[in-house]
Length: 220
Ligand code: IPE
Ligand code: MG
Image 1 (cartoon, rainbow, N blue to C red):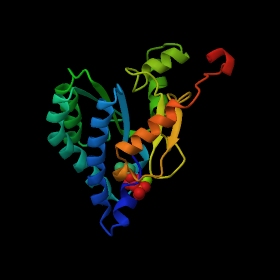
Image 2 (cartoon, rainbow, N blue to C red; image 1 turned 180 degrees about the vertical axis):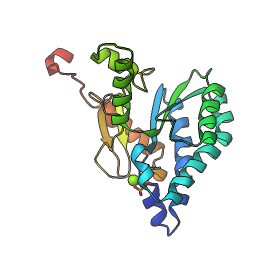
Image 3 (tube, protein in one colour; image 1 turned 30 degrees about the vertical axis):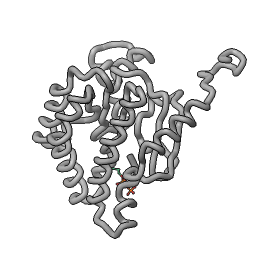
Image 4 (cartoon, protein in one colour; image 1 turned 60 degrees about the vertical axis):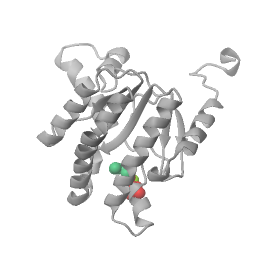
């Protein structure tokens, strides 16, 4: 969900205003995904590298998450959303950790959409923590064992990965899981990512031929 800071700067607003707007964009996106029958939505909210930002901005993002959970969880629960957080929880404040656990347990019955929120997450962290867990259990590190030990083992690999904000890079998001994902790069800044932008990405996805290593004739 990239582009909050630029969205704010263009309006001569503080970056925090862009992040707040980003929460609204996420709420709209969740609703649009449910309407379109999307079953899993995984969003990158805070990366392992985002700690390098000014402390003031990091604090704001932590605060924003905590407040958004309190405000949004009841509605998400009603809408049938099941929230799951992926990422390193140890580095987070106790209050934030409790908020994550509460949101997960409050929405555990949701059956419409699984919402994975990657928070203090990095693709490299995920692969390393999975391998470390297998090693600690003395298990052989095979592709399927590793996949099952990743933070998103409860959902299939993503079909489509959308990056907003005009950058064309992965920035340590899901690394293992996107081996065969279709990539879509949108110039829209995240706060401007609306239903039309989502539909554009879904239409582009629908037009792709997914071969998974096979030939075109084989998958036809
Ligand atoms: C949001 O966008 C991503 C988060 C870390 C919350 P940015 O804050 O990266 O926005 P830009 O890239 O500065 O525009
Ligand atoms: Mg950015």
